[in-house]
Amino acid sequence: GQQVMQIPQYQHVQEGEDFTTYCNSSTTLSNIQWYKQRPGGHPVFLIQLVKSGEVKKQKRLTFQFGEAKKNSSLHITATQTTDVGTYFCALNSGNTPLVFGKGTRLSVIA
Amino acid sequence: DTEVTQTPKHLVMGMTNKKSLKCEQHMGHRAMYWYKQKAKKPPELMFVYSYEKLSINESVPSRFSPECPNSSLLNLHLHALQPEDSALYLCASSRSQGFDQPQHFGDGTRLSIL
Image (cartoon, rainbow over all chains, first blue to last red; front, side, top):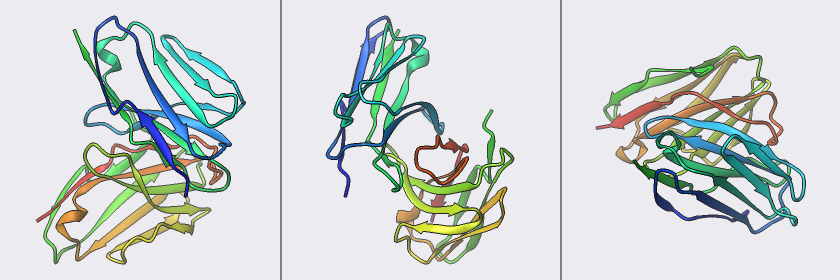
């Protein structure tokens, strides 16, 4: 089955520092989705990437899809305490259910 | 505010009890999902309903029984659960079953099995 690796598992940053999480797949992907789950909350859809090399921005968040469509990253510039939570990538490689990465838990120290 | 509503928010039950989890969405979505999430783990897919028909069962034990009475409702019937079934149970919906569709999650039901 499809393998997905998401790193790092945890990241602790000072408020104002940048943060990046990476997601790698063993197979070529149709698309990748990113979700955020706040502590005690539920996953919330952030974005979907479809095209090779695609880059999308949402305010301080930048999402990239690799040229080979096997990896992706989420970068947050100048983190804030509101960014705290677990960020999951979710992979889709065709007509199969989404496979969630293990997530990266972000802590922001004020 | 979530557009997928789950009840109850918390549930404590014994191993011999029968209970049901409920999920409702009014977004006109035709695919609905049940996930199980253990602490500090990603959501694990249990069931997928597409146009009110069960399309995917990820080898879930029969003590979990899903039901989709109509396009807006999804139930999960629980019977003779085990302590290891304690988890957050998340319902989600998407416009269709195509797995390129964003999924909208409910707040979940936190289930504890005594």
